[in-house]
Amino acid sequence: MLRAALVALSLAVAMPCFAQQVRVISGEIEHVYGPGGKVLDDGDLQARNLRAWEHVQAEKQLEIERRQLKIERERLKLQQAAIAFGMAQDWDGNSTDGGWFVGSTRGIAPRKGLSHRIGISPRMGISRKR
Image (cartoon, rainbow, N blue to C red; front, side, top):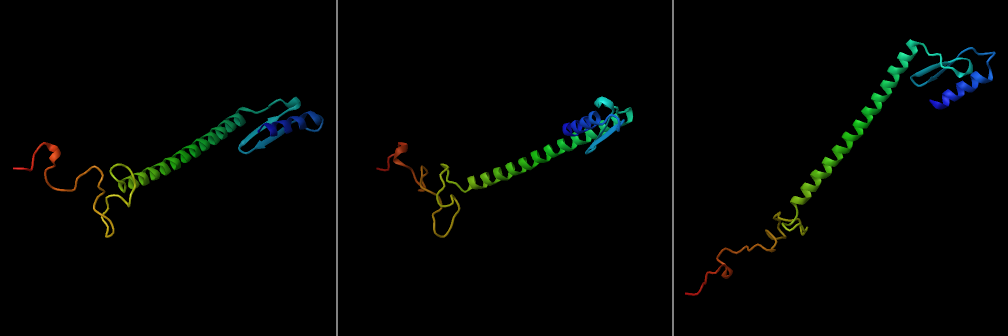
């Protein structure tokens, strides 16, 4: 937009005898320049330019919000994948052979800290001797 203004200004200064007004249109914004590069926008043109500028700003904001939603969807997908991966972990957080899932080539659970035997341990203070 600045470049268009500079072009219009240079045309207005270089050819004052040929052009009384120079109309510059860049996208949705339009300006009228007079002798000496003076902006000659009337009230109607200013109102149209304001609406066009607000429209451009609203489109930019919508694009920002779309990007944020896309990023949030990707974050949620990664979070769900992390949760699913975490469910396939050992209790202590170390991945072994797929965790607690029972398969034909692996045991029911890893033997780390949990006793899989049923009975009373001598460590509990109960003696097995009679």
